Length: 189
Picture (cartoon, rainbow, N blue to C red):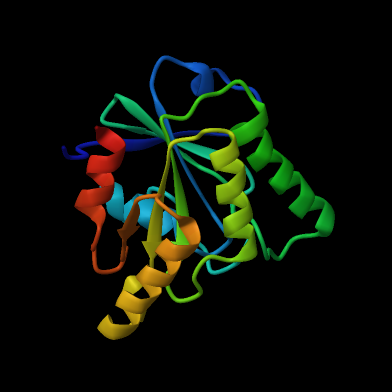
């Protein structure tokens, strides 16, 4: 399975026909600055499809991308530390939880992204718990593995697996394109 086309469709902040359509949706979620946009760009082999920023909290809506004319990727805002007001942080959290847990919209899969260096934060584990409770199909991407030495990586992956249980983990580096094929296979099949 390979991704041959991808384009930005729209940003949404509430009910929208694109989310309720007949095409399956794969949602990408993680804390701010974990690399969601970089992962999407590496996955679809485009440098600037999803905008990435060094400023936490830049994504303020659900950005929807059409992939292979057969699947939507939904890039959700990051949670955790952001450089926005508390009110704006609460609005972002409400949007995330509404879309993933409270709305009628279904996701084929939810890709939870965890920073390889930091490991799962309390927010990551709380999100995983909520997704599990809602019976979502979750795959965990451990991003930025290129920032760790090989011996550190093995230990960190084992530590992360011990915290997340039986969920599938895909080690990933958007920069070095490690894990791209595994993630593509996971979301396309």
